[in-house]
Image (cartoon, rainbow, N blue to C red; front, side, top):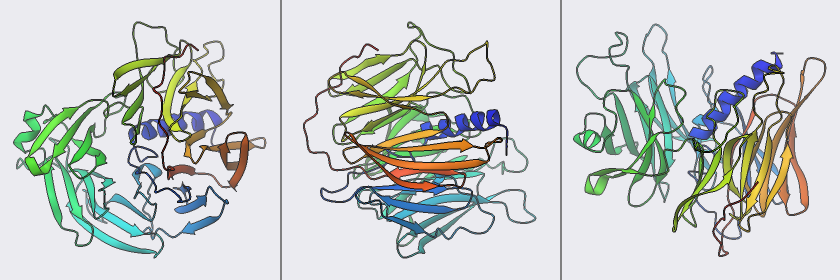
Length: 419
């Protein structure tokens, strides 16, 4: 069993990917129709297991992902449609005897247990499935083709460094295409001399919103985002979506994100993350700070409880007197009346996501002299009721998707809160 400090540092890397992805939980979800049951999907990248848990009765179902032997797919790589019935990922595989990977997109029908699209893209050093469109007949893929000047990958012919593709799922045909050589890219102010993966956050009837994500570069806490409207050949910068730690509530158009305000006090993070000290919200009335934390570091805000609250993960500051101490992160919830409540403190890794009437909480705990005994637990919190829906005693689980309930109430704006 690895040293607990190593595990903790690795957890920060996972959190950084969660900040960027969307996959991950909320940024690419659509609203489930009223009356539908809510679901959570848990994924184990070590074993390739995908489990769906029903919030209503705790019923569980496992799915075969049909992953090729030797292929690793993490939760960050996965994209599920709005109903959770299909998932997609783009993989890069290094064929035997080759020096450059090959990229391939897989779209799989979970219930049928079959791949409905297997699309090869040829040479690429990285790729990422982005989002399904509104009627889920199309999907986006961003791919990076080479590092400039790399003798193993750069063809030296001025070909596109990266591509953003829109594919028809039924036929595999590319129906829209944007790449680094398109004049629109330079005109919009995008980077033209750096390899990147366009990570799609929104794919609706009028176009795509994507984040300009540098490939192979760490330590970036704010990126640029753009809106591409293929029908009118328009590409322009858009605000908010490039924030590293962000969530979006589709039904109200609200954004919430963690930011750094240099004019306010902040704690020293214990790990590779930004010293985020304020929580900001943008809605129809504009942008404003609603919460300031002077000592702990703000991380991973998420809309929960039918959009009535924002859950926020907080990390304690680095303690120079105990540099090897494992800190206990905690979650708080901010509601639209300005009240702040503690969701709980986790000694180990935890994650929170929206769920019907409240939120879902995934926790992991270790026991034994060498932390060799692992227990993952998923609970559903709705008002005062707490139900345990799922447990596992194997390592490697992630909460990769939850289906949000229908939002029907009028919601007041979030006020500024004094901790």
